[in-house]
Length: 449
Image (cartoon, rainbow, N blue to C red):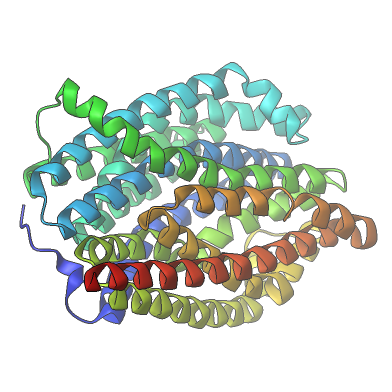
């Protein structure tokens, strides 16, 4: 591996744009295929199947979010080691964080499979909706261990500056999924089961590509050592556990929103299921900001370049605002295309219109929180990051959704959720700004003494 810390020199804006764009292409490809799954299933003409896939997606997102927590630890620790020119330590972290990712993923899979029916019921699914959700999840959830390792390896690639390799791992998986979807769903007439099988193949592809690139191109895998594993477990879990809690908070909040909408009718559930697939496709760039700016912050933190840390955060927030405004305008213009594409009317169409006209712009504040999370995770305060996200998922969601639903029914559920996002996005931004300024001052004071 080249031991040069790529992000401690050069233009930060360019680093952020390149890392985020390449990461977004990979993420968007995966989420686009999820949206394509939804579209193909909608062609079967049964709204219950669409609602079932939406509920299944919320649960798979929960399991995936837990895995992303370990990938955040990989990015933070490997990038910091690279920035400090500790190449052997970077190799040890790369191996040990993936071992921990596998163990945690297997544990979360076991829990979800054990309580699968109860979890589906908790989100308000009944009858055919519950049956289709179970049909999909029983195949996809066990494959999450491959996705966990693939995402962890992709995070290691980003940590060493290999944005293209990280992008290609997820892009290759998405292509496999897109090709296999119509074959399994329509040609083999497997329906929901076919969509699940295609997703499993895609996850295995991501795993193979990312692991192979980490090993063959960057030589970052070293033989596991029990003593090193024990020593590294503490630092890894110190970041991974709060990050897992952080990431799990979002799908749990979404599950609560889904259950709140189910009270008003399955049409709203179907509409929200599509919105849930639209958000990561349309805002993949914003999602990728947190994973991309993290290694940039980590390397400069490791090198003690505090002016660059502050500038990177400022540039990331400006990019987030510009992108969200542009995407919100596109959604406003294209809302009828979305409604017609999925042949929605009534409840589902009403929810899509509300989202495209008023809710989408609030994603600016989700982006602010994402960037703040990246900063906190990479600058040694993962617990604060976790507290922000748990707060957003609980006191920033439940009371606002309850009040919104009381006054504006189903539409009020989304309005309440958006208001909570605004409040916690601003709070996260303010906390990180204060923390970074204080850490810079402490660093400069230490250098003078």
